[in-house]
Image (tube, rainbow, N blue to C red; front, top):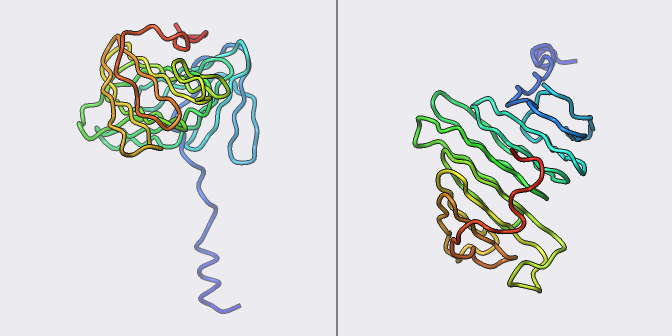
Length: 208
């Protein structure tokens, strides 16, 4: 074997494990975690890393507390992926994908105006700084007011402000939603104008 190749192989060493970005701080019922091709039963204090996929079973819910202090409360029969969570000094950037079901985010307000926190569904992006809000993504059920649309996102804000857009329709303007209001994103259409909270899909079981 050439000498240079030997040096490269000797210096490579093992690949370091990915650092945890948070942990499971509450679990009621049962849930599963996919990490690559590995499947685990969720337990309290289990560490979570970027790209972990979490799924709750019926009559179950869990809470992930991120290192920066934000909390993700995943309701029953729901699935999410932690796409990104980076803390650098006073700045924190987080991106969560809600693939199905209900998620309530309690976002810790950072000192840096450059920080960002986003929840993505297949047809919506919810961007926020320092707030508490709920996102629901529904498939296979007609959207209220749009009977031919069988996938939609609902967003309700309990504290603070969020901005909601539909990435499948870049020309549609985003909607700003403040405390006590909500919006619906049907299929590829623009988010609806903000209206007072009252959607049937919000307030999922398992939230406190």
